[in-house]
Length: 312
Image (cartoon, rainbow, N blue to C red; front, side, top):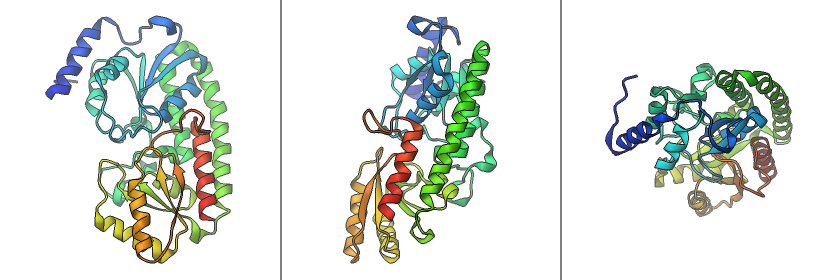
């Protein structure tokens, strides 16, 4: 790849990659020298990498709980961390919207990179607005797609560390069974709601894969990226929809400021209908310490429990 630095960020990347060039891709140094050094962008991917890698990987996550990956801007320390990793794992599909140049440069320099977008079947992805070339990046809300993500990560680890392939494959098999049980749990809980009550209104369009897989009509105040602002007309139109359908509850998200949903609640009230805020859903991040939602499985269970209990 003929990569040339672009602007200030590009110059910074070039300098970091040149200075770090003495550490060859795949080399192991420091306290985790006997383990694969993995850097994952989001909390979901850090959790997945840890599950699949088990004792054979040391995982560092760039983004902590509550961080919005759509708006995240990597600093010099993040670039260095990724450059020194054996494997970098990222979602793609423009989820890490401000980091594309970094991933391109790492790949161009020969570093091992696992990109979920590259391994997923496009036929299973949802297009934004039903057309065009923009795909919805929030694949983790369809558990069957997260199973595919687990397979992609296991294959990537096996390529980077062939000697531990049996362990990665065993961890994958165990995790796929856990995800099958999770999928069954979501379906059972969703079935507690009559079809007409399965309407999910949230801060941004993070839940379309969830709605498509589990039979919910989904409306988001913002688009698939929180980089887009909701206008007055958007708030008014969604408030009309909620009032007309008499939807019991709407939801804030852990990685999006609650003010937009609070404004929507006020707009619905102005139209003569009271809608509750049904709680906080985890959208682009897992829960933090002591949240009860520190893993992908716990997070998805917490979300479906909150949704069903608020809409009943």
